[in-house]
Image (cartoon, rainbow, N blue to C red; front, side, top):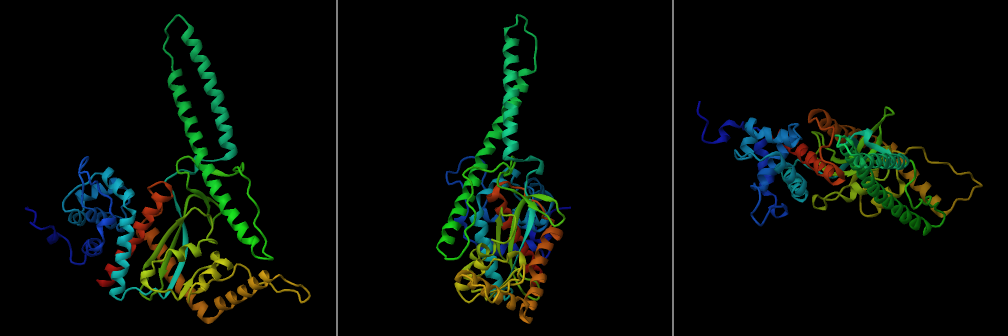
Length: 426
């Protein structure tokens, strides 16, 4: 049987691949990274590469080797790739180097949805989920375990060097396995020493952040200052040898997951909302994530009137900062009911302001409108997370580092929006 002269004859009219081409081709390719020298391995059009990535992520193929194989076996992928077959190294390199291009296309999809009447950012719902990193939990060591392992390896290396020197002094030239074993120990020692550097950098960032919080608290009379962190990492602080930016995330069942805290902001709409913002964090809780998520929202999509979150985002100061910047209202249940002050107890001005704010938050969240917003949240952002994990099958990152995992999280949000818009358009 002869193949048709045009691959479009083999692609269905309602195929997702046909919709993906429109926003990708409308995106500005100036944000894409290309080799202007024209040397090295073969280059492919950035729009084609991104379209293939979006379609494969939307259909549950996240590995670069799986994507390469799909360019041969999947007719829709062959159509998007123009019957070209980039290898897995090229796909992985493009994915790592073109996050600005991916974000540009993400915004184009949202603007297209707004023009079609499928997006309204009046009410946004926020939630986070823990996703596994491309690292093993067994590769996580504490500062104390790291130092003990370095000392143990140091003693073993000294012993092997002494044995090698003794063997070299003998007259017979007997074969020995000491050099190979010594090299393995030295490589392990070098990896452990290299892991101490990002541990120190992460700790220094946390310490500087804590100092900024202490200075801000000192300028507010009556506000309690956070405790000062020591200059060096504590013995129980951990680092993962495979992905130093990932953290041990607590799970509801009491176990721990080596991964990241992935945040989503989804529009609340009756037929299923779209992902408006994606953000990735190494923080183990959501308490400090609401303001960064709000600041990451694209301003070109319009003003947010209502921001809905669960009680894990209960942070009075961040909520006050969001509401002071415009007309946005935050609906967030409290972790604990507002305290009732004793009539003879005199509170500081800051505590009185905080308790007043918490009473307002409690009244808003427990009002009929607040309960209705929380029901919207359950059907929008929690539904989106369920689709990403179950329908799309994305439960683990394949790129390492906070930047690499963030690239994949952007691609997941982009693929999710393309799936949803394509199905709503039929």
